[in-house]
Image (cartoon, rainbow, N blue to C red):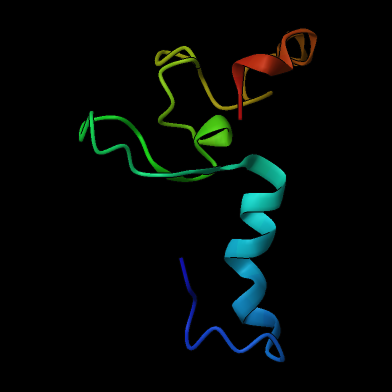
Length: 72
């Protein structure tokens, strides 16, 4: 994955490198084209590991802070 021209002298070109460092890079699997791939699946709000019916973090109650693992 490359942002702009990939020139490491430009800070905006480090975006994907930092994202991959912090949340992983998942290669596209040839055996399963429907499998998620790309950057940050572990921290992606669309990841089915997170409850789909959750409200935004701390929007309704501070009790959300007791289970931060339910939000990316």
